Length: 178
Length: 168
Image (cartoon, rainbow over all chains, first blue to last red; front, side):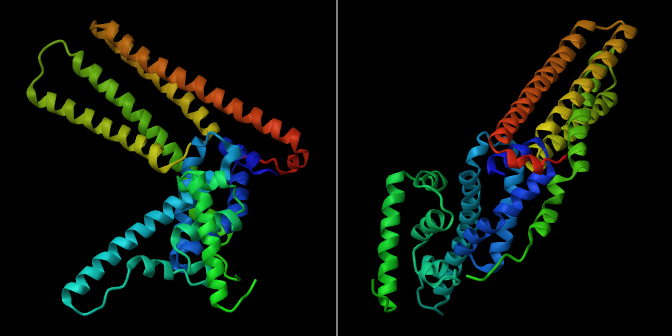
């Protein structure tokens, strides 16, 4: 069954279709979130995302474009979580500095490093990692990635190029040669 | 990567259950409609009083209107922020709204006739409620029909999906 038919049936109010939609997209959504956050928060955020999806589903006007819409919601939830975390870390760094008991660590680097599961991906900055996950792992088009990340398609392409370059550099550092 | 989400699909659906609860949806619709009907009723009673009311009675009327508005606000908030109404739910909700509008208008009109107070404002306001409910009913039916049509088209294009058909 196509995603579009499942979405249409879910919009009509069929619980079975909704359950099938969740079952079908549960893993891709969780994988995306997990690439961006640690395991504990990935589960929480995934639940938040599905809640937002269920609440927003009746208003989805283009059921055929479910995947980009779903990942737009996922991205927003991840961004919200990271924003909160950056703010807390920033505050903690300032407090610690004021107390004079630590050296300066970049909170962005700290957040990036938190995704430990895929060592290569975790070495990439968040924007490049996100684009790689959406484009290669979720198999979304450049246009869909642009819509999800709210950036022009040209920026998606340049981020993909940069991500590939960075990945190549990381691989070469680890001793891989093309 | 061998890591997997801790929640299975079934567990995830169970966790989403509160947002999908039928009782909660009914509560939201009933709160909104009874709040609105109650507000209209209390305003009609208050303004239909023939003589000047003691200030204490006026305070009671005002408090009752605030209570009705609070219920309407609660129902509206549930529907906007907490409980999704799918196409079929919306059709049912629109019919309930139409029935509630007609009943409230009829009750207020009867009261106005018995008291000999102005019938025209009651019919005017009641007519607005009924018209809004009618528009909602037509819109929700149209939306549901469009979804059903699209589902049929998609089933024709992908016949294998017929086996998955199930009710709510």
